[in-house]
Image (cartoon, rainbow, N blue to C red; front, side, top):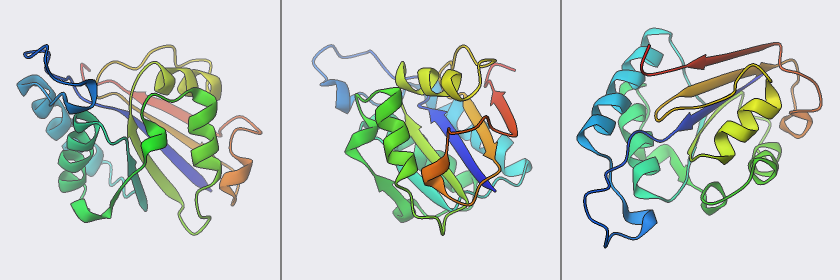
Length: 161
């Protein structure tokens, strides 16, 4: 069984128009969202084996705050440039290349590509608000087979609920 967890970064700050897109930090609301969602996932005993993050500050900070709550070391977060300004197909390429020794992979990134991939994997997911978590379980032992068949389970955890 492989479990894919897609996490859209928490609410980013728009306070300074001079910031480059990659350098936008989380807003206060975003920091709170990331901590609360991390706590919610920890209560569900979610234990990702592999954490991958976009290099954008807002995604990486979301990953770090959630890793803290999940009992994972921040140094275990792998920054992958392919998770920034990608596409649903590009994300799927990254996922399919994961080492099969990992059973639960958690990716932190952006819209619209995260929503597009989530919808592609489960037509019931039509949107991912900031800090939303989409979780998919697949009846396979190989990441390379991900998306060839529908997941056996798909859920969306919305921070507003």
